[in-house]
Amino acid sequence: MRLLNVELTRLRWRRAVVVLLVACVALPLVLLAGYAWETRPISDADIAQAKEQAAQDAGQPWVAQEVAACEADPEIYLGPDGVATDCAEAITPRYENYLYRSELDLGSLRTDVGAAAITIMTGLLMLIGTTYAGHDWNTGSMSNQLLFEPRRLRLWVAKGVAVLLTGALVGAVVLALFWGGAALLASSRDIAAAPGVWREVWETQARGVLAVGVGGLLGYALTMLFRSTVATLSLMFGVAIAGSLVVVAVLGDSAARWLLPTNFLAFVLGGFSYYDPTACTQSSDGSVTGSCERVLPAVDGGIVLGVLVVVAVGLSLWSTQRRDVP
Amino acid sequence: MAEMVIETRALRKEFTGRRGTRVAVADLDLAVPRGGVHGFLGPNGSGKTTTIRMLLGLATPTSGTMSLFGTPVPQRLTEVIGRVGAVVESPKFSPTFSARQNLLLLAGSVGVGRDVVDEALVRVGLGERAEDRYKSYSLGMKQRLAIAATLLKSPDLLILDEPTNGLDPAGIREIRELIRGLGEAGVTVLLSSHILAEVQQVCTSATIIGNGRMLTSGRVEDLLGRTSYRLRVGDPAAARTALEAAGMTVRQDARSLDVVTDEPGDRITRVLAEAGLYLSELTPVRADLETIFLELTDGDRMGVTPSLEEVR
Image (cartoon, rainbow over all chains, first blue to last red; front, side, top):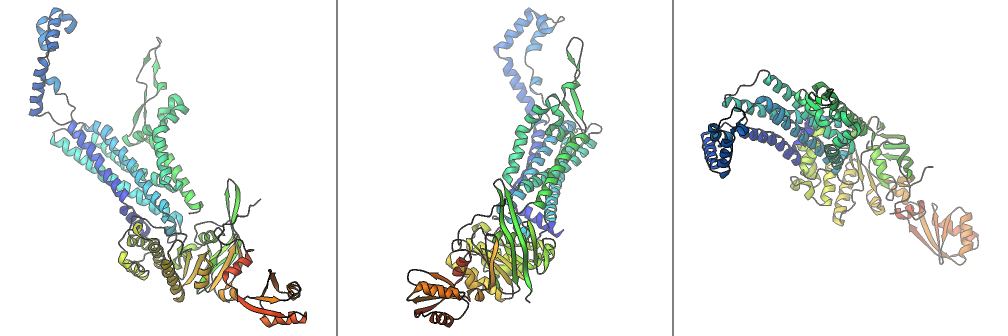
């Protein structure tokens, strides 16, 4: 416990960690603010602006030309039942056409912006875990710490738990703020969630907290393995940029099932649809029918991610215990 | 028999790389008695730091045994690490933390309070600069902070690896005085150094190693106790023959003979007189550690990183 307190203090005192934590709090809230703005209710000012725009566009020469063409041959424009008298109304721009805006929907907020917020926080926590451990190796202070606590595994665990707890705490707080804000927003707009949406939100939030905490642990474990911030960051960027290409090159049509984003989103969202050509059904005339999609359950995604984390943590612990400390 | 604070038996460390296996420490027997400042002397690359790192659990020996305060390490290092303070190679702290923050983190891991941190900082003369960031410190201040860190545990044994490396003369004097003071205060200090004069000035006993092997060990006084004599005689060749026949080590140059012996000078005059040779000059020359070291290492090792033995 004493060692854990020390490591939590060390983590808190690192300026890079503080900056990343601020980003962890700010970015999801910025995403939510952006979503709130994009789904804001239509105001009188919006209607006035739309009317002005519609009137302006209605005065354009192409409108009169199109109306004239329509009146000459209404069936082409309006279908078999079209009559010339309907052409002006059908073609002249109306202000309603300029007022299209999505309404706030908690279900899509969960699968789009909510998932993005969890992904961003997980990435940031990985960076926090990386810079936290990397700093100790880069400065050589790891050996100094081992002169005070020579039990390497104990030190590894204390640091790992510090990152895991920090990630989980930050994840819990930020996601609570995120969904608290979303609930307030929906309430202020008199929008009720569809049945079951809040349960899915809670489940996503719980898995998100776990993902964010374990993301931090993974970054930490990899850096303890490589003993270098640069090496871990290189691996992370390498996986982000080339990982999918490699998986596709090796596995071909069945690659999507094994891509990290697919498994991550499946775990966080409680299932994720991915493209799988083998799921398509081909009719006798050769055309493809069906959706060509499969749903990856959360458990399956979690198992893939869990195996990766367990392997990284295992190697890291083994390395920490066995290798000499510079 | 004096209690040994540090003891190694047949300690060996091999590093395996692409170019084969290198032996950094070769069957080293080291014994450091309680009390005083013990020099651990050897050229760069002779295995001093590797030995220290093994003693402190930072590196694993390939074979051999080690003990601190009679307790086998690394197996039971946790039982004794609280009595050991160490600075291995250069000071290693977080550059963006202040001196106090760095020490507070180390102190926290062993349950030591803020007052001990402040006391240690004052003791090494950093009380006024405790809130400054470590990266703003001079090399001397960094070394002092490293020593302050070792004092957090009120150690019975202090292991300092090249503590004056890179310091200016004033800094070197400060650190040496600090080490001497700690030794006088009852702390056993193992001072690793490749600077012979430093060991001679500060240490009460010393072990000299080369190529990972112990060459000699003992009290500095005893190591220096072998006096050599420079003598001039009419027939140097005949004198050399007579002295070597009497069991003395003789080096001959163009004008004089150097004789190394544990026996008093009158024994030389007697041997030469019995051979019918008479001295024109006999000058005692007290050896310093450098002379001892050069004798032990065939005169070509000091300050040179030796190639390590290749294991076939």
